[in-house]
Length: 158
Image (cartoon, rainbow, N blue to C red; front, side):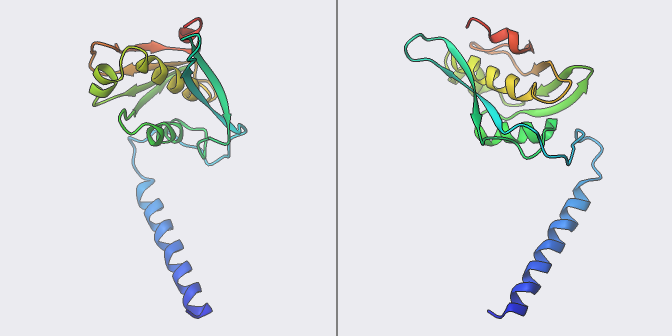
């Protein structure tokens, strides 16, 4: 392949990406995003300690969303957990509202401690967004999880 052909392909791909981005950016129902890089270089990961059975939430270096906005953090979390997908609804003051349209896996198949790990990891990551202190989850209640408002203190001493 010649250098000219490579350059033409690169320009074509860059043009298509720009066009797709421009077409998608006019949606009014999307949450506000920012193009500023985040200052953090970690994300939060929740696990249960095998020895104590207690919840541990720790920072993990290098696992971060590209931008610290509601949608980028939600996209980041959705990539990590394909069975429980979160949708942005709105932000009101210090609360981020999300919806889980299909919560059967969360409420019926993750056991009793799985939802706690999921909520802790989700809340810790979403409350990294400046000004967000609470996350309101909306989904159909099941045996192992109920909708509600959570903050980081929710997971203390668990």
